[in-house]
Structures are given as C-alpha cells and as structure tokens.
Image 1 (cartoon, protein in one colour):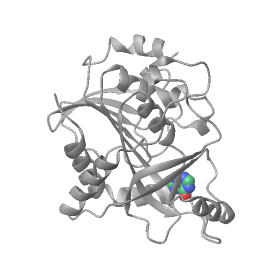
Image 2: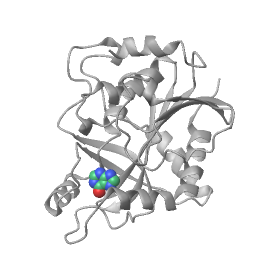
Image 3: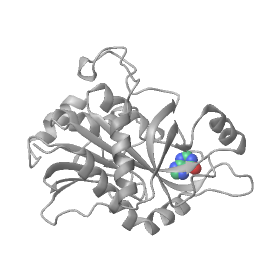
Length: 271
Ligand code: HPA
C-alpha cells in the first residue's frame, strides 16, 4: 500500500526529490516560517494520510525551499492510536526516503517526567524507549527498510545532537536533551505509570515520533527529533488535557520557529 500510494501521488508532487523531511506534531504545524511560494497538498488528497483532523494539526503536506534546502514538510501526522495500523504512520518516512531525503526532523508535544523539564521548554531526543506495544517493522520483511534485524544502537547521532545543543547554547535558545518514551496512548499517564516510566529512564513521554524514528533510521536517514514539553504528566490531582497541550504550544510558537530554523541550518545538508 505504501508503494501504491507513492505511485498515485508522485504525479502531483512539485519535485521529484528533496533534501530533508520535517514531520510536525501537535501544535507545531504553523511553527515553520515558510516562503509564500511553497506548494501545498491537503492530506485529504493522500489516502493514507487522510483522516479525522486532530486539533493542532493542519493536515497539509508542503514542498518548499528553505535556507537553500528542498524540504517536504508534513503539517500533522497520523498516530498508532488512531487504529489504522502502521502504514499511515510510516507513509511520511517512506515518501521522504523515496524522494531521496537524507534527513528527517520529527517534532512532538510531550509530557515531562522530570522536574528539570518544565512545561514550555524544549527537549532534543537523545534516545528513545519504544513502549507502544508494537513496532512499525513487524510483518513481512521489506528490504526497503534495511535488514530484518535492524541496528538501533545510534538512532540519534551523538555528534549531531552535540552540534544542535551547542548551536542552541550559542543562540541563547534553551534546549535540553533526554530520553523519550513512546506509549500508544490515547490515555495520558496515571501517577503510577509516570513513576514507572521515570524508573525506566525516560525523561518525557508521548504517543508518537518513535515509529517514524525507527523507520527513518532503518532506511538510512539521519534522524533529529525534538519534543515540546507541554505539561507534566501523571501528577495526582492535576489533570492533563489536549487543550492544555495546545495552549502551551501556541505560547511557544516564536521559540519553536527559532529551534526549527536552527536545526535545519545545522543539520540539513544541501546539494
Ligand atoms: N503524555 C503522553 N503524551 C503526551 C503528553 C503526556 O503527558 N503530553 C503531550 N503528549
């Protein structure tokens, strides 16, 4: 199905290849300051990406030139919890790989598990723990995604991580780093679950990003991922709602744009 969808939409894509892909999660959709000349395609025209709109996702695929790089920008993603399997989650990465992108930047909103990660701050993902209860590489082996048993010892390149952190410090943009745990959702965490995730070594938790990171790394792409810390999760007597997550992200839009620009500048190679 990934291949068929690609064949179907290839004809309407404005370019045949690109340098990097960006997948923007909850609240990040309008954080990229894109050139007005960008070409956009609504997700409603892409069978695998079409679906009910999640507030905070613009549901558009945009092609643009950005600081001299050709980018494909996915404004909104599909999630495992939507129950349509892995293909809608995998398609953006598949498309990026087919278009020759060498890099993918993933963003999300996440819940904090540490007092050092306060809501309103950003965390560059150093490593992840997949607790989704599934894996996008399950199933019949497709060599498109590399070997059957694919290495995951360095999904997020240490050197790239250090380059981004150093550039953020240099630009006086607060950016911490940590381990992201992916759960299926759609529930937020109980206090006991948050305590368990902390013990496992996670710093933040969310319902996305890890499947795309697994696939992109397996396909040989450089992976950079950043979480916006929207809330502290699993506090007893302090509820979490998607509206709270979105209002936190909209308050941070200017800083989100600055972080995206910084990462693009430091890590997306042009040709
Ligand atoms: N938990 C899981 N996913 C999330 C959270 C959270 O607290 N906030 C945003 N996405």
